[in-house]
Length: 471
Image (cartoon, rainbow, N blue to C red; front, side):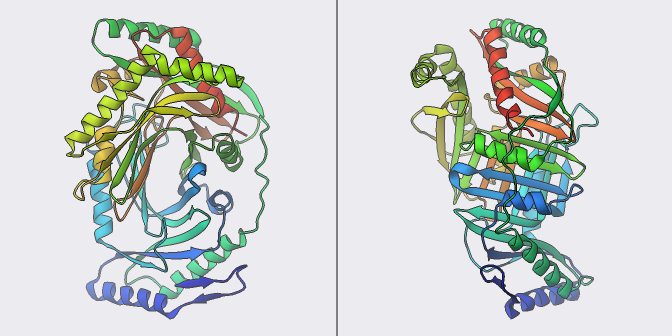
């Protein structure tokens, strides 16, 4: 265990931690095996975004996730072990990878607060295979990070994961831990200049309005022929800056502008980042209590309180929007029931964001111990909120109409811990950042009664919300 006094006046490496590592070393030398060891320490508060800014290296995979309204944030840097796969069996392979790692993992923790256990970070693409050969993220990535820093209600935890076998040097592991802790705690009073909302775009390539509207018209014809009920069509906005985008400042802008969303960033360790501020939770499980969101049907926020209230009333009473929303509720409850869960649909409400508002119905369920979170993710993705209904037909239509690779857009992104707790969001309101270039993504649900002009306006509204944050 490492105890750090306020201000880091001194660091003491306790004998029990050293003994724990020595015991692991001796056991693995005797068996000629390799074991994953996870060390968890409570530390002084530090902003995980500052840690990302100062410690994460371009050549290392990382995952940043924050829910400002819940006072939660977590960052994962580098990997101790990683799985990259594609294909229809990717969720099963991901679950097996996590389970195999857990069977070979031992933990040492100084407390039992939130995020004190090792987390596996999971990144899935929308489709089980990418059509674009050079798309920078695999169809599925799961990794156990080397370093994990998390915050819950200003309580901060550092987790170090490492491999122990006969060839490791225990003292070197302790020195690495001490060194990383010193660096992180030195950031406690660091005040970065994140507050910069200035755009510096030299060129914007606006998505072709006519192409998108024609796709909507074609989709409406297919819906009229009763081949499907809904399809979600997305569009992109390509942006070029006169200098590389500043990831940390852009993320800080996102968390300021969208405090009720999940702010996230994923780096592939090769220079590309996928970032966003998603309003949509796929699933959250805490001590076997699951919550998921049916989020579909939208309207813009008003410029005045009277206009805003009128837009909300029109949304709540709009037959087309309510129909689109009910498709998502019915899908989620059916899919959860097929896993043996008993979903409870809560009262519908509005999810009001900075520039848009949605119909929102939370759904709860108790998760049996034998149902792994990734089974539920596999069962729910993609929901009608981001694909359509019937799902297989809608996905085929998406491939037909969209000329770009969705990749991580509208896909499940999140983490699962050793106790079956998890949090997965849907990667919407997002952008792929590559140096001085960015591709922004947004979509709209097309159902009977959809108007191509209004659907295009909705997509542009969502794109502009993200564009405002990029620096």
